[in-house]
Image (cartoon, rainbow, N blue to C red; front, side):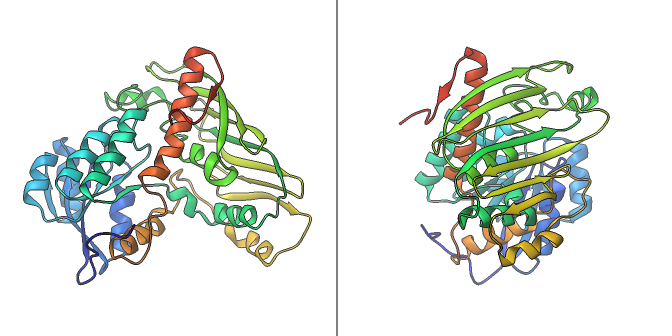
Length: 352
């Protein structure tokens, strides 16, 4: 559906809630679209983080979301808060008539994700779930190849996320490494890679997972492996650990098909390491320039993601990843945790 009230005669006004690590990417993306969108306010309950964000941006700061919604004139709120807070905050924004953009994962519980979608539907506001890795040039080429049928039948896909998160990372905030507010290596750090399971390969039939807390003093897992069967019959896995030594090693996806083989690797799916098909295509020339160097696991997709949000709120486009799209990867995550807990294969969908 199109936005009920397209914003076409002025810049869109956005507030960033949560001024931690990922907020900087949002603030930078907003600045790149100056004239189309403007930062109206920032919000954080940590006084030091709020003070720093206000000093950096020059906008008014709020220590409470309720206060922001009551006092600030904003069209959309970007939730950069701990994942377990997203649902309640999204519902609060929707009830105030404000559109919602939430960072990954959209929620830490299946029921919370459903509640976000339902409340935004009820209020008639948009719910965007940030999936900026889809905009990586490397993955865009892979998506085009799949959509054009260049792989033929896909037989297997393997995703690896081998990163390093020391104990000091988890100790930096009380919510990190908790089931309620954070989620483990699968749900938090590998969330964008779990998104590739459905977006690139297709709907999942079932998962069989094992998780372990092997080295970090946290509630959740620091290591996981999930076996996957897709509805197409393809088999594969996602393998995740935060224990790579001594630094982030690999964020990759390998796809094996009857007429094509591709591996996109690097530290964060930023390097096309293998690209081979039975036929040729003009896109093959772009392989040489699609790869890029990065030390950030976040990639550079936030400005591109914001472009879609802006065009959607102006009534010019539909969301690339809305709440229902966000539920697709959340469903795989929750199914994986259920499988690991109960030591059984879990079939999707989780509910009808």
